[in-house]
Image 1: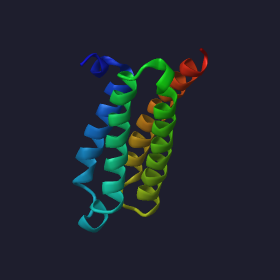
Image 2: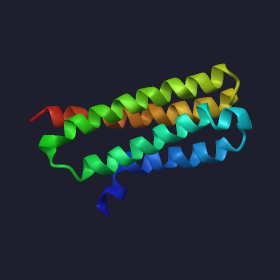
Image 3: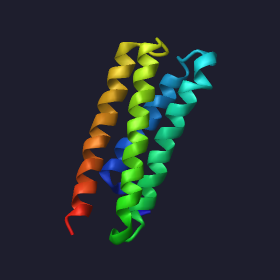
Image 4: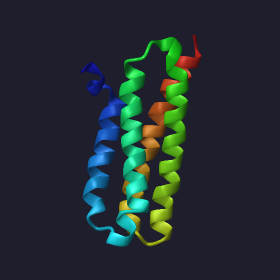
Length: 116
């Protein structure tokens, strides 16, 4: 699959691996609620990257916009993790920086699909 070589996929893949490691530091009570929502959102973004990369350009935009929405949900969930003390500030900052970079990449992808 050539879509595994695209930078946004690699970055999101790394985000998942990082979150997976952090998940073990989350209390059991929060791991299966907020932690699970974060994990599912990251996996949804990964799935949508693969889907968008294999979709004709004329049909990409709705997928990319749905992915942007999922990324915004993830931002909120990660912020909640920090504010509810589910994770420490250091982990929060690392995850947030990764999500922000993915967001910038996605924004570029969306813009390039609108310029047709």
